[in-house]
Length: 257
Length: 317
Image 1: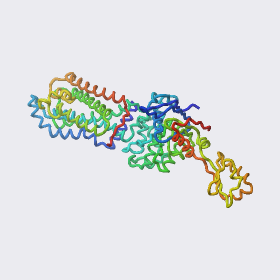
Image 2 (image 1 turned 90 degrees about the horizontal axis):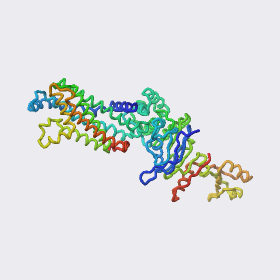
Image 3 (image 1 turned 180 degrees about the vertical axis):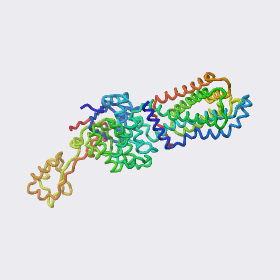
Image 4 (image 1 turned 90 degrees about the vertical axis):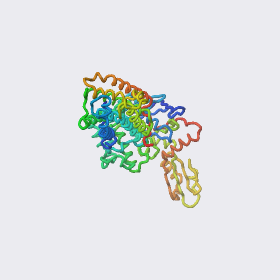
């Protein structure tokens, strides 16, 4: 764990020198939340809920833009290869698991911070309220973050260029977010798209959030099912990542083309 | 004294290519072993094996008696500066040193202290707060090498640490290596710059096609394979018979005599005695010191011209 914390401290040092990229986790979703929340009032009313549109946009944007955590985690590894510091870290006596765990810690903190900020902005400025349970919403956020981190690790392990990483991150955010109801409720998606929604972890996260925010008299047990599905997604990605990393944790990455 | 780094019968293959083919080496604490050899001879592979980054197909590597692949403690006693510079360009010099110190297991305070200690010997004090990306190539090379030493390793692996360095940087790094050895570290130093090896007075191993073809001291290698000579030039007239008939002498077209001798100073004394009154005709005497460069070329040249790899030559210290 000491080695992982050393890696985390170095990630924080690097973040302080270049804090802009993680801003995508909060700046863009806040803009979209502000612009789109009113437009979601009617769709929610159409579904029979008397709730502000932020009940859709805040968790939806949180899910979509959390996917950019895949890129943040991946780039944290890819740039080490570009700077040739990956080998140096490995040569310094860091075990592979310690190094990987250390690399996961900063994106974990960033995702936690992202969710706190987005939900706080929603609460303060966009009238976001939980009819059901904030604790249940936090559980959903935690499980969804686990999916993002595991997917990021799998992408990092499997991909070999930073361009591939960018493509997977952007496509993942848009496709998984769109299919899963991150932009608009799944019920408003075209008929042919709706059957595809369960293939997106965002769908299950939104199911959990909608339960926590829209339903009355609900608690943690009412979001257990979507959380279990999310954890299954996370386990699948983690398995893929583990197999790839065990094969060659030091596989070279091309970073700058 | 037991070896700090011990390599026994190591073979490493990549597919059908044998990068290392039965390498035996040992480095005692407080000594420098210079590993020489042409590109592709297997030097960097050997460094990676010693650092525990790769596993040999056969044979063993022991760092302070332990397998670096299995022992985290052993790996943390090793300091490695790979051939290619690896530093964080966005961080300052001091932050780089602290980062690698902490990664190697130092506490934050110890890493900070140690980073400050390393600035001076590597001439980085004035650059401590400069971001590494803005350093010159030589400064980056010094930082890169210093970063390998921040955790006070007992075994140091320096893979061409002066590649591309200017003379001042090279001198600084060589001084640092000598200091490390004086402090008891075992140093494996790969290079193409043979004068560095002589400056370090290192024990030498030459790697050729994955095999160690010769080991020995610099002096021993030069004595066995170097080309020491006396060069004598006489004033007008024929070369004295005493000189032309001297053991190992050869007359050149311009009237000079070259006398090959393992001990040129002794040969000069004997030659002057043999010349007697003719010694007054000597216009010039030069002692051509044999060099490691000459010995290296002789050894690897043989390997290049032969179909196979030369047999191991043991040179006495």
